[in-house]
Length: 191
Image (cartoon, rainbow, N blue to C red; front, side, top):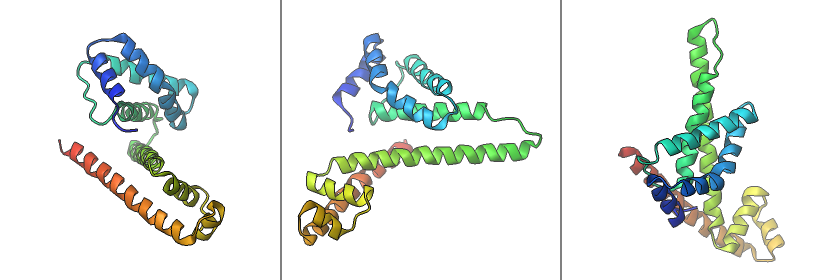
């Protein structure tokens, strides 16, 4: 999902204190954020609390928030931070402080890497979904069903060369989209 006008308008309306815009954002993104939180937190209650914290914090910072990519990514990052903070606070205290601290940091890093990988996978899926239909179908058959070119050609009733050509073109298109994303993210981290 690219940066949409509706997200931009919602963010601007929230900055101006519009509660209806906030309610719209809540309805639009709550389920997604809750699903993410459920994957990493031990209970539904913890997940709901983490998401509630995100929306409370969103309302509190609405006047100062700067949404540079899109509202979905902004909320995703807030949720990731909320999950990590909850996990930090819930880390049990062990007798050996050094080993528990090292273990906690290792768990946080692996969770953060997992969340980042999941976000990258979502971006890749969105990029694949944006491909022209035949290229998208070929990519999905290769990625999801792990089919060989010959199997794809048979299933789609097209020539083997057509499969190869479309797949190579799709990879080039995906490489361009993902490289732009990497450059954009790198540029954001410099500022």
